[in-house]
Image (cartoon, rainbow, N blue to C red):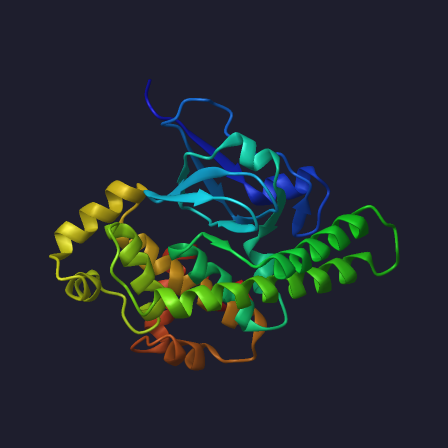
Amino acid sequence: MSAKIQEIDIVEMIQRNGGDGLTIDLNITPTSTNASDRLLIRNGILIILCKSGEGVIGIDGKRYTLSNNNVVILPENHVISAITPAFMEEASIIAVSIDYILNMPSPIDTNIFSYSRYISAIKVEDDKFDDLMSYYRFIYKETFEDGKYKTEIIHSIFYALILEIVTEYEKVFSIEVSNIRDENLSDRFFRLLAIYYKQYRSVQFYADKLNLTPKYLSTAVRRATGRPILDWIHEAILIDAKMLLRTTDLTVQQIAEQLNFSSPSAFVQFVKKHTGSTPTKLK
């Protein structure tokens, strides 16, 4: 049987559940039992908290073996495969749109995008996982309340949850980044991308870091993810650009400088090419 791709549009899912930027209490498993079938998340991410249970999940060709106290981030536009249904059934899941995270008070929470690109699943200590689940249960409870400040309360609790998760990822990141070697080539590329995307956006740079030709690296990434390598480089820059436009008072010129564009006009052209809108319309 040929592989099928099941797409999940986070924004549509949230709208169906009557949420405002996020929704919880989901049951998301592949609709097919064919092991070669894949999942693709659009317009957001899935945050999965699993206290117990075992399973396997594959993301961009890398397989993660899961056990107790796992935090898993299923990132937007990455190829997801080999999800163990039993693990997903035991999980607490939050679906959140990209815009909801970009509108958080601090830029630090956007690190969740770069971290999850190269390490999607992490294991945390018992006490910390219990803290994360407490946030989840509080959000779950507020979802069914009709209080005056329901939206603001959920937003604040989720923000705290994201900061806690980012903190746990930073612990893993500090260890993993010191040893960039890995058996999976696409994984090595995403690790490098998380570090260098603001400064370097050429395939040649990443190929040189990995001692490969640009053609070889491009082919390997496309084979693993189904998308061109430049798509991933541009996506990393666009996420930062949208965050800076929506959450700061920086001018287009200042943002262009911060993201290492040669000129404001080059930044404007980049954004328009990849979004169809000018930077000012994305605010």
